[in-house]
Each structure stands twice: as structure tokens, then as C-alpha cells.
Amino acid sequence: MTMGLLAFLKTQFVVHLLIGFVFVVSGFIINFIQLFTLILWPINKQFYRKINCRLSYSLWSQLVMLLEWWSGTECTLFTDQETIKKFGKEHVVIILNHNFEIDFLCGWTMCERFGVLGSSKVLAKKELLYVPLIGWTWYFLEIVFCKRKWEEDRNTVIQGLKSLSDYPEYMWFLLYCEGTRFTEKKHQISMEVAESKGLPKLKYHLLPRTKGFTTAVQCLRGTVAAVYDVTLNFRGNKNPSLLGILYGKKYEADMCVRRFPLDEIPLDEKEAAQWLHKLYQEKDALQEQYKQKGVFPGDVIKPARRPWTLLNFLGWATVLLSPLFRFAFGVFASGSPLLILTFLGFVGAASFGVRRLIGVTEIEKGSSYGNQVFKKKE
Image (cartoon, rainbow, N blue to C red; front, side, top):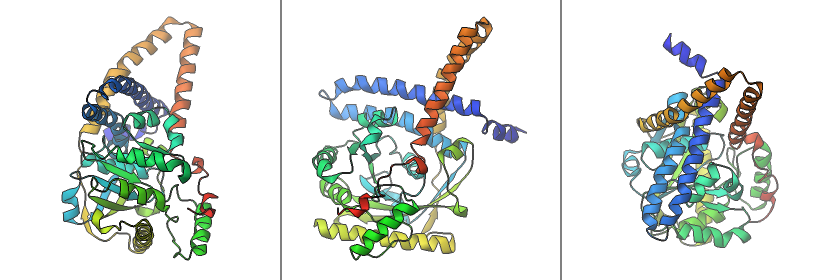
């Protein structure tokens, strides 16, 4: 009976709207607090960073809560015990394939379970800087933004990466080396470029863009201990979405993780680029094995989910929904058509805003980057 009611609630628009309300309003509150933390930067930079790690965690963990507790999605690791022992205990660069709408969310789930969600980093496209909540929170978290035009990005990326060399908390720095999400059109163009450069063709990935990777490992050498290669897939050939998660759909994510000590990666830029191309050929082979056998190689490890994401969301929901319900009751009790229409207009605007935020993750609404850029030389 209880499970049936919960399953019903997960499909209801008004419930989704309330979840979105909590996320958006708490996000603006967090951004407002972050704005005031800027006064700490010239006084105590490391204290500023620690505060912003926790503020960012309070926002991002709400999305992780949706994956872990709302949809019940399972995340399984395929790796070795020695690698697991180092999770959350060293600075690392993460290389993740970019095929799915919620690949970032699966990555965040692993960050959360090993205590590095608040301090996780990414090399992000500059357009995201202007997206409310997402980009604004990342700005305070010192995320490195780029225009994906190397001539313009080089100095900005190098400066941003070097500034992280003294980061006080263990960080996982995510790189999507393919530069954009996988689509059939982008893949076709990418493989034409691979053929023209004499590189082996990839079946499940786009040709990796090497500049960001080689620059990251050069700038973070001495800070970062290793590169974690992560190859993600979903059981049953599923193609999950954030909307599916919001509707409570359960998925099963499998992640193959391989650890490469940074001193194994060549210092020379060209050799490091060749290393990355070889890595993606291996990733392609892993995806082929998964398609044939339904599993990745390695020990099967299921890190336990922690209660903090759920408790954090419930805390925000308690604080924010109580006054909302009182206000809504007062509006309808007043009997004023103007007040009621204004309130319904606000609800509609909020619904539109939440839907636009979700749209940032959708593949079909993603950037056209990659449709032509692969035709240019790096």
C-alpha cells in the first residue's frame, strides 16, 4: 500500500514542482551566502574554499538524492580493491565517457559516496557560467570554464588549473575529453577526422580532444596523484534521462574504473596525446565487452549510499515548503481572483524555469559543438 502510494506520487507533476521549488529556492539562498563568502578570499582563501565546498554539497546532493533515494538507481563499480582504497584520499583527474544525459549524476553519486562531492571540479563550457544555480555555484567553487576554442582558452585554463594546486580538500577533476555528448552525427564526423589523421576508428566514443587533457595533467602534476578512467554504461541498453529520474524510474549503472598513476603518463605533450588516444581505444574495447557479456572486467563493488543527501533535502524541504503551503492556503482562502491568478502564474513560471534547468542535460538540446569542430585541426 505504502509503496503503491509512493510510486503514484513519483509520477505527479505537483510533486515534481515542489522538488524543483526546494532545489531552486535553496540554490538561490546558497548562491546569496556564497556571494558574501567572497570577503573571506583575501583574508583566508582556504577557509573560503572549505565553506564553499559545503555550500556546493548542500545543493548538488539534492540531485544525488533524486538518483539514489527517489529513483533508487543502483551504481555498481567494476575495479580492484587497491583502487577502491584510494578513493577519496587523493587528488585525481577523472576521464568519463559522455554518452548519457545523467552521466554527470552517476559521477556525482560516486563523489558523494567517497566524500568529495563538494570539492569535485570539471572543465566546463563557458555557457554554463550564465545558467542560474549551476553556473553560479560553480563560479564560487573555482570551476574552470572554457569557450572550447584553444587559442582563446589556453591562458584561462592554465591559470585556472594552476590556482587549484593548493586546494585544501581532496578533489576529483572531471574531464569529458570528447568535448561534447555522443550523437550519431557527431560520431560520423569524428570518425572521418580519425581516418584523415590515421587514427583507429572508435565505435562507442568520439575522437578525444587532447589539448584539455595534456594541459590538465601538466598543470596539476605534483598535485594530482592519478588519472581515473571511468567507462559508464547502463544495464538493459537503457538510455536514462533526468526526467526519468524525476519520475522515479530505476536504472542500473555500471562503471568500470581503472587507476593510472600520473607518473605513468608521458611528460611530452605529443606522447601524452598518444596515450589518451590509446586509452580511448581501450575504452571502446571495454564497451564492446560490456555489449557482448553485460559486465565489465574487475571486482564487483557496490559502495553503500549515505543518508546525508536525503537528510539535507528533507531539511531544506521542511524549511521552505512550510511557508509555501501557508502562503498558498492564504491565497486561496482570500477568494481574490487577482491573487489566485497571480499565484498560478508564479507556479507556471516556476514550472517553466525548472523545465529549462532540466533541459540543460538533454542530449537533443545539447550544443552543436562537434558537428563541425572535428573537421578542424586541434
